[in-house]
Length: 111
Image (cartoon, rainbow, N blue to C red; front, side, top):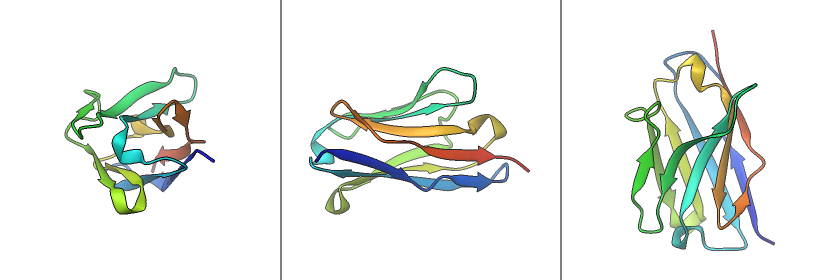
């Protein structure tokens, strides 16, 4: 069964950090391009970071320099390290690969 499961979301204060995980099952994540998206309340889903099958990543301007993706191929998992978080980063974060989407994990940045 092909599945993507995100985790690691939560409540964090502005300036804080979180690391999101996206664990894949049923396929080998490392051979596919994958992306992180987010959807804030009342807004459209937007691309946060896109990683090619070769491993190069492009980031949205709004997160460049603050967010970083990485992979653990042994765990078939990708990560989104988010630093210097801002209230405007509040959103449900999704990973997607091979046409599949995870269920999302909520990140709330607030005092």
